[in-house]
Length: 220
Image (cartoon, rainbow, N blue to C red; front, side, top):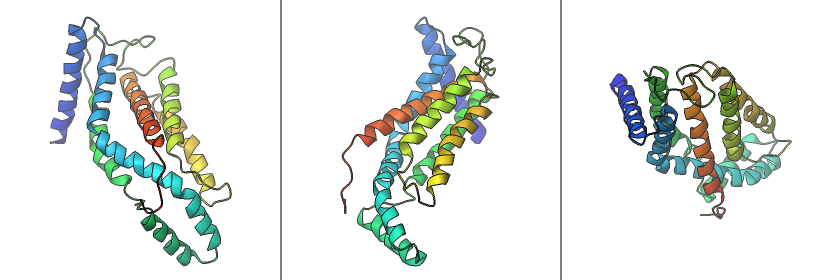
């Protein structure tokens, strides 16, 4: 069943490529970008719920930090007050995780489809990249993967006190994860890297849109 799902993703990519051929601009790169956009559109309701939850967590973080500071000698009381704060503002710390878990099979299937995809020679190159099935020899794609991952992570990073227990960990992850993903993408086919770049860019645009919405009100 899983193999059929991966094959379906390959079929969709081939179909989109055929569209670019019919338009006179045969390009697997363009087909990958269109496919990425389609996935973002289809999963938008889930992404919106996840990103909206992240935004609410960001906004309530200063209040959480105040509670933790006030009851730092009584962790049990602090946890109770934090949960009450979440309840008052209708914030569920786990609500942003479920949509992500639901989207993961789609993302993994697309990754596997691109890793094993059989490209036709026409339209398989992309600007400086000789073939999308091979890693980028100039490492530009991995750099862009890291940069776009960082931009999206920066928008979703909760604001926290510089002295808070999790501040140093959050800061480390903010820089480590983009570097790590950029590093491992050096071995990925360039088509995979291209997908990740635009997936992150579209996600960044979505997050910017959500962040522009009015802040939450207590008891919302």
